[in-house]
Image (cartoon, rainbow, N blue to C red; front, side, top):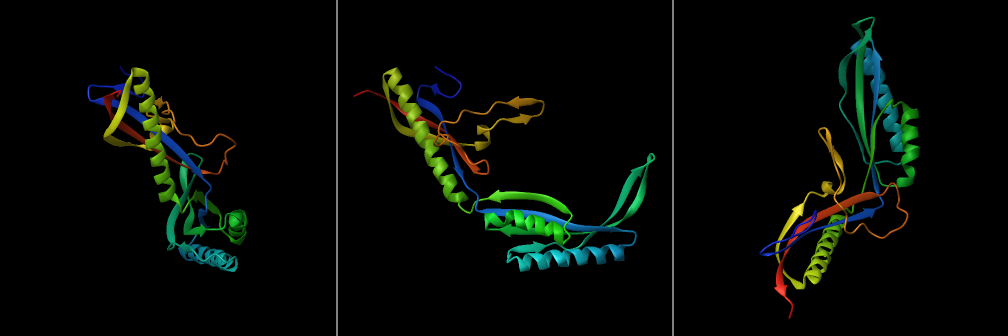
Length: 220
């Protein structure tokens, strides 16, 4: 007998178990850049370096120790005007990666970097230093969800879910739908979605999913 998530076979009962754990971020990674466009490479480097030094000075004054900047990059810029690409100048660019461990400082650092001369905001990503711990918890809960489902099916069938015969790790991306070419794949159902209630929209979601086969045994 087979449905979308479970199957009874000759050797045992196979079930899909999944869980999601949410945790508040404790680290932010800010990627910004300063660039300047000039007609001559030397002038572009000079202005970009001046802006980069101002951004570095702001970060040090703000007490940020964990940041780094890239080497200067130079490129030619063109603008499409009146049906043709015309040379606009030389662009010198310095990139910055800033790690923030005090979440309440992120907004002030972003506005301060822009005021100091950064004119390109690449990304702001939020992370957790507890990722390994949270992922382990999600995996334990996925196994528990699989066991609960197997016992439910076996009880309904008049048998008992016995020892584990196999465990297959499943890509947790199955828990969220996504586009695959021109088709949209529906997300897999989540067995353990955590405690009900309002969720922090900024929380980091860590998922785990498994296929587990349990031996079918007769009831004693």
